[in-house]
Image 1 (cartoon, rainbow, N blue to C red):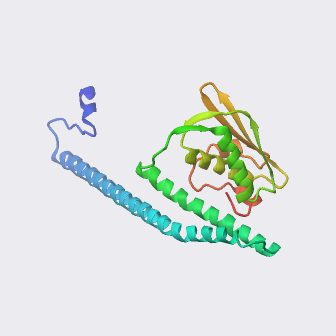
Image 2 (cartoon, rainbow, N blue to C red):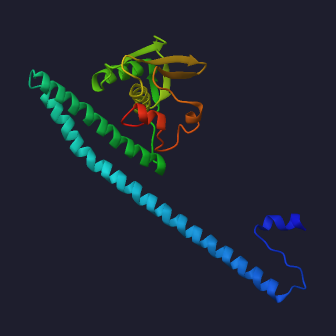
Length: 239
């Protein structure tokens, strides 16, 4: 009998004859349970609506921020053509260029998160030489970001390593990994990007001489907005 009743779900069986008090009590308990289910359903629906409105707002904000950021980046490119600058001007120009690029990257990240959450992210999968892409990423890191504090190098394969992927997304992944490694590697340290072939797949490794992560911290590596206390003490900007 229990096996027959199990597929029916949340079911209370009352044998006859049953006292009126037991029947009324069972019915009231069932109604309370059903009301709680409706409350939870409505709460989840409101939460889903709020999340959707938040994502739409962030996406709209990111689109609106793109225009002034593009203007700032364009202005810095014009300044590059105006001739030599004083050391102070050169330093301030480099700060504007670097921080504008960081803001533009953050705006693009917000748009990417919304596309991933909404299932609208598209990948342009084409054959691409990962070795050439990695070398380009290192050169751009050297000019766009302040990498003079650490040694940045490419190791492993020297010939072509062709993969099927989205060049823009692969570049995004490599730059994120390198920036994160550099952020927690002290001055004079080393950040190394290694490429290798593993059967029909390409393998990318980033190794640094930074603070590293404990096994406990690795268990929470992909938790959103998590900051480790030990890293916060070593790096003022957190991470």
